[in-house]
Length: 232
Image 1: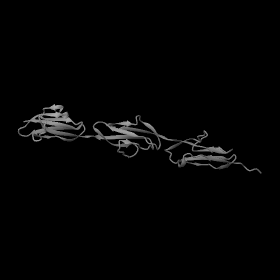
Image 2: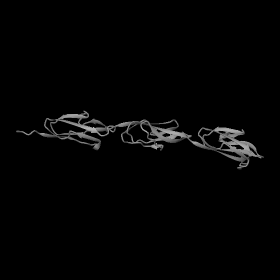
Image 3: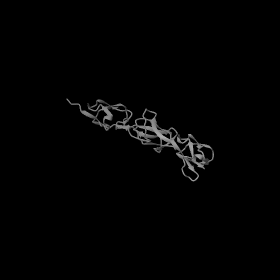
Image 4: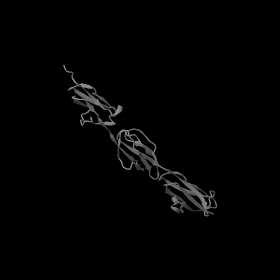
């Protein structure tokens, strides 16, 4: 009477709890062994092969004629990350888009506002996450496009009443129209001279450097100071 040889099928797990295996045990010589795997998160890993060139998936059969050691290989799945803007800014990082990023890794994305705009937030086409820093490093769990959103900047128009010698003289006139304006909004300045004083001109960027018109209207593109000049 002869004993039937027993051989071990061993599966080397290099992926911890991310992958579980079945079928690793001792088998009688000539027995048919079925081994298989289960990926805990199929968004993160994809099966490549069993380590011996066989890529049957998710199970394979082996005729056991000797001890067998399998070292399965899995690859980390890559996803496409893209970024864009609402048209009022630019993406300054990464240098090239879109980029492919391995599951669970991060990618740094930076947005910069155009002149006249302020950064508001990032939104994406996958979920309702809203990120409020212009530089973000989101963890990648799938294909995604991030959009940088901006709003117009508020600029301040300041008016100063001066005499022809350049001295501030707030009692010479009342000027209306100063205040905060959204980028590209129109500001209109006008004056009412007090008794004994005569308007000379507006001086400043909004006046086209100088203007003798009774009122001026201009587009607000920066903080600006306009001088209303008067004489006696």
